[in-house]
Length: 371
Image 1 (tube, rainbow, N blue to C red):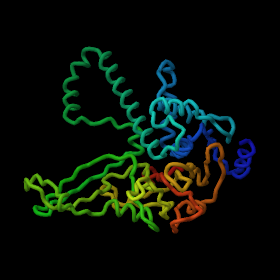
Image 2 (spheres, helix red, strand yellow; image 1 turned 135 degrees about the vertical axis):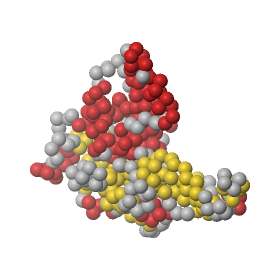
Image 3 (cartoon, rainbow, N blue to C red; image 1 turned 180 degrees about the horizontal axis):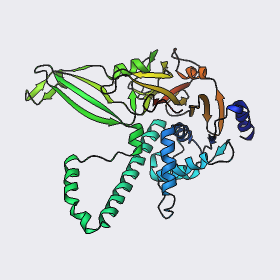
Image 4 (cartoon, one colour; image 1 turned 60 degrees about the vertical axis):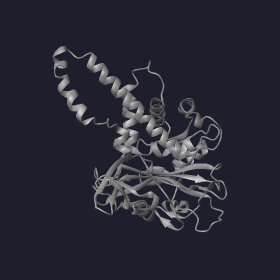
């Protein structure tokens, strides 16, 4: 990688961002699914900064057992504190921990990058929640008696609300969907909220993210055996159902459902459909945030014609430069090259490099995007 690293440094020249590091990640036998997602997360600047803060504040507790959060924080700290600007790092400790934690990732078989991202974010949340709970319990047991006297009042307030802990993972990635069902007899609307870390979208040939989002929020009629039980009518009724984005997240992660089970084939098939993903995206169907605007900063790409084999790479935007990460290799690419990963307009094409997970950062909340 030495030559490639110096090539990247030469390409960036004076424009090499102050304090930034561009490191490839070693592949430990089919761990490209992991490497591609880790690069996307590393260049999710707010997430990276909070993870580095976490590491700085917690490294003193050396006796603490390794978990995925400490391993990830250690890896990101290792990258960001390198003396060299470019090179290769082996995420050995993280990968070992991942395999120990989840048997799904133990084999050398082709893994799914989206499953890994989902598992990782949920695991980080679990660890942070457990740590917060432990800290709370420790604080309560060590509280002086006069503070405990105020305890029941606070406990009651907490008991009523039961507010879940909002970690910095939630603050970055969590959005809220609302599932609205309208009874066609009495017109009563029942709304149920659910949180999400990413949106999985069905895709169609020659479509766009905007049209996929519209389909995601389109109205569906529930009738025949799918009728809805209306509490007001106290019976099964025809109804209309739709899913809307109630609260848009800071980091919008979109997963394109490129792997579909085909009944006639009895197996999954990869859909190489051309789906245009714009560099700037406007969420026009969110309830609370009128026209939330986003900027694309990372794409995890699946390379290959089938669902059970292939390779993952990632495209990342950092300080207005686009970079291509393929395990150990890192190179600069032109912004116009991003559109070569939209997919294929024809069923059979020699291009098998297709955008699979898209990472968008919200604009305008703190002035603009940091990437």
